Image 1 (cartoon, rainbow, N blue to C red):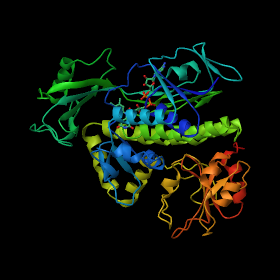
Image 2: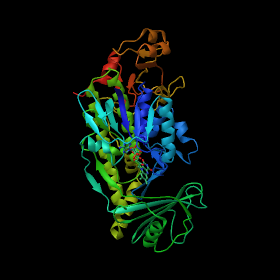
Image 3: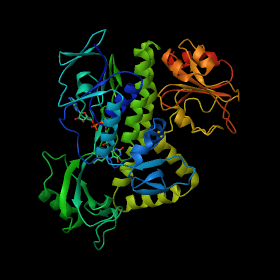
Image 4: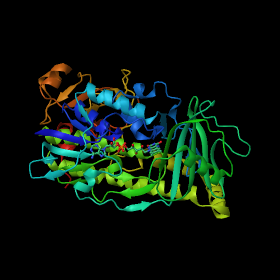
Amino acid sequence: MENVLIVGAGPVGLMLACELGLAGLRPIVLEKRPEPSELPRANGLGGQIIDFLDHRGLLERFSAGSPFAGRAPGFPFGSVPLRFADDMPLRLLMIQQPRMEALLAERAAELGAEIRRGYEVRSLAQDPDGVTIDGTLRARYVVGCDGGRSPVRDLAGIGFPGTTDDEVLRLGHFAADVGIFESLEVDGLEPGWNRTPRGRLLLTSLQQGVLVAGVREKGEPLDGPVTLEDFRAAVRRVAGRDLPLGAPIWLSSTVSQARLAERYRAGRVFLAGDAAHLFPAGGSALNVGMTDAANLGWKLAAVLAGRAPDGLLDTYESERRPVAERALMQTRAQAVLDRVEGEDGAALRRLLTEVFAFEQPARHLAGLLHDSGVRYGQADHPLVGRFAPDLRLADGRRLAELMRAGRPVLLDLRGDTTPDGALTEAGGRTDAARTGDRADAAQDGGWIQVVRARADDPPADALLIRPDGYVAWAGAEGIEDAAGRLTASPA
Ligand SMILES: Cc1cc2nc3c(=O)[nH]c(=O)nc-3n(C[C@H](O)[C@H](O)[C@H](O)COP(=O)(O)OP(=O)(O)OC[C@H]3O[C@@H](n4cnc5c(N)ncnc54)[C@H](O)[C@@H]3O)c2cc1C
C-alpha cells in the first residue's frame, strides 16, 4: 500500500509532492493529462507562498528570468488602485503557470516523487485502513488536488456550494510587437482594463512580444473552445470596433466562480487548492492553494511516521478553511467592485480610491492579500500562530535558510554557545545534538532541529517553528516539550 496518492499535477499537487518528498515519503501523483499543460493561466504568485518558497530554497529558481519579483508597489483591488509602502507585507513574483509547474515537477522528481501522467482517476472507495483508487491502487491517504471540477471531491461526497458569475471572460495571447507591460496603441483605449457600456476590455503584455487581450461581457460559459472569429466578435461587441490583435497563440474562456468545499476532509481523503476553493477575482488562488499544500504536507508526513496521532490531520481544515473564507470574502468584494457599472460604480470606485490612499486601509488590505490575516489558534505571544518573521541571526544565517530541510526548528535565542543539534522524537536532545554533529543527529531520528543563536532584538527567548513556517510556540520555559506541542491533536 502506498502512503499518499495525490490526484492532479497542477501547482498544488506538485507542491504537496515536493513537501512529502522532502519529508522522506515517495508520493505518487496521478495526472490525467499525458503532457504538462501549456495553458496560460496564472501570470504570477503573490503573498505568503513566496516566503514559503524562500524557506524551501526555491525562490531563486522561480525568480530567474521573472519580469518582476519583490515587494508589491501596489495592487488593482477590484480595479481600484492600491499603493503599498515598503514595509507592507505583500510580495509578488511574476511567473507563467506552465513554467511554475515545470519547476515544481522538476523539484518533486528530485525529491523522489513519481508523476504518472495520462492516468485519469475514475473511482474511489474508502475502508478503515486506506483508500482504493480504480479498484487497483491503494494508499493510506488520498489528496484531491484535481482542480475546480475535482472528481475526487465528488467521489468523496463533499459538496461545493457557491455562486457562478453571469459574465464570461475570453482571454487571448497574440504575437504582437509589444514590450512587457506595454499595450497596442489604439485611440481611446488604455493599457490595462477599459470599460465600455457593453463590458470590459483588457490590453496588456506580460512577456516580450505577446499581447494579452481579454474581453469580459455578460454571458454563459462557452460550450466549446474559443475560435478567433468568436474572439473578434466579442471584441467588436464590447469595444465597438475591430482591433489589430496579431496572430493568436492561445484563446480560452472562463467564468468566475466563488465556492468553498463543505469539508476539506472525508475520512482518509483530503482536498487542496482549487478542489477546495474557487475565488472570483485574481491574485489569491495559488497563494491559498499552495499554502494549503504546505500545511497538509508536514502533517501527513508526521502522522505516517508515527510522530503524531491522526487527529493532527483535522487541524488542516481548522487552520486552512478560515484562510479560504477570508480570501473568498475579499475576492467577492473585488469582483463586485470591478463589475458594478454606471455612475454608481464610478462613485464607489472613486470613493474607495480616496480611502485606499490612507495608510491603514492599504496596510490592512496588503495583509489580507498576503495571508488572509488569519492566525492559527490563540496564544499569549503575538508570533504564535503566525508565519515566522525572517529573522537574521548574528552569525549571518537567515531563518529561511534553516527551514530548507522541511523539519521543525527550535530556535534558541538565549545566546547559549552550545552547538546546533536535534531533538529526539520524545523531546530529549540526541547525543549527536549534544556533540553538535548535525548529520548524525538527522540519521538517528532527531526530527526537530535545535538552533542556538544570537539575534539583535530577539522577539522571544526561543521560538518553535513548524515545517510550514508557522510559529508553534514562543517563550523560554518548557523547551523540552517541543515535540509534543507540534504534533498534538486539537482538544
Ligand atoms: C485565466 C486564468 C488566470 C489565472 N490567473 C491567476 C493568477 O494570476 N494568480 C493565481 O493565483 N491564480 C490564477 N488563476 C487560478 C490558477 O490557475 C488556479 O488556482 C490553479 O491552477 C489551481 O491549481 P490546482 O493545482 O489546485 O488545480 P489545477 O491547476 O486545475 O490542476 C488540477 C490538475 O488535476 C488534473 N485532474 C483533474 N481531474 C483528474 C482526474 N480525474 N485524474 C487525474 N488528474 C486529474 C488536471 O488535469 C489538472 O492538471 C488563473 C486561472 C485562470 C483560468
